[in-house]
Image (cartoon, rainbow, N blue to C red; front, side, top):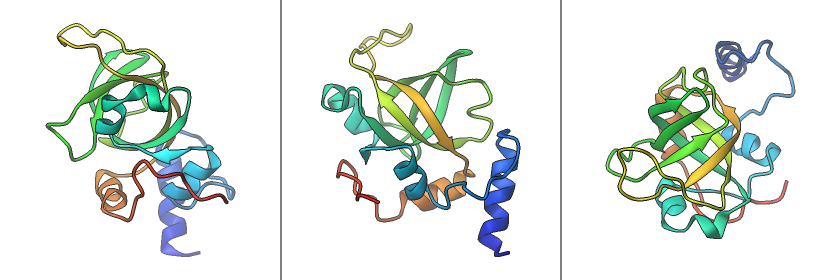
Length: 154
């Protein structure tokens, strides 16, 4: 068994998903493909024009800003502390046990109001997460990601 396999098993077990699976995605790219994501988006791209992506599943790399309630979180792009935030629904308090998460989310068709924010915020619904440490998520972010580009067919 390779070190990468052992790390994936440890991450899967540590994510609260129960048991490790031989069919678990090997990389964030595999995960996005298995979840039928259309593309990878930054929080800025989502904020700028959520209507372009409404109803589509997209890959995102996020950091928790704060939980709004037990099912909704205010999130932002990992590494973009000055960038826009958006509301991610269908989460649990366990979703952000780690600081960062790679996720597939479905973009909502409407913006939503959040107390303390002057403008309406973009929103999305969580579909699935790929566990990673903050360092692993940063490594993925620093890779060759075609932001806003269609994912290759697999």
